[in-house]
Image 1 (cartoon, rainbow, N blue to C red):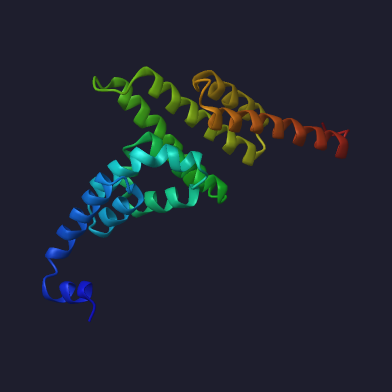
Image 2: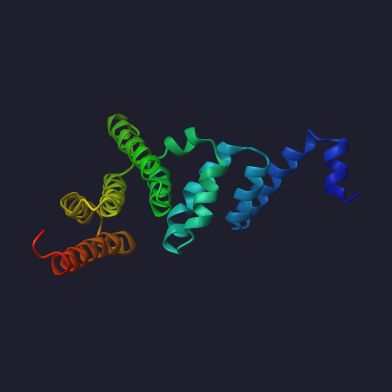
Length: 197
């Protein structure tokens, strides 16, 4: 038998400890994806969530949305719902899959988490709060586009552009593209059904 299987059979209590140590080693050596994987295998979800939080923005910027959703679905929902950033990424993924009601719920939780953070004395910097609000607004704009609610889309996209810092190009361009797509869609509707618009 391979060593891992033998260890699992002979000393099962030792396996999670070794997985945690492996996770720590990977983290210290800059291999965060592997560190997350080992933390998840050990079911140390608090550790996994902390590691995911460190790399979530980067993974999103690189277009690794599927990997990020897999990580978020691998930790208890309570940990996801305790982090408004996680709620935004989960909501966006759910919207992309057409799961509108689940996405709406994740965004409501994000709003509630932001309110809780705002009341907490140990809150993140104002810039981080603004960025989170901007991401929530951009995601709400995406949801409004899915539902064909263009006034709502324009309102949320404007909020996103107001809150997001200039250097946050990925999220700002998302909000801008949604507005452009809405105008294109409305223009197509005018041409197809001029008497109804």
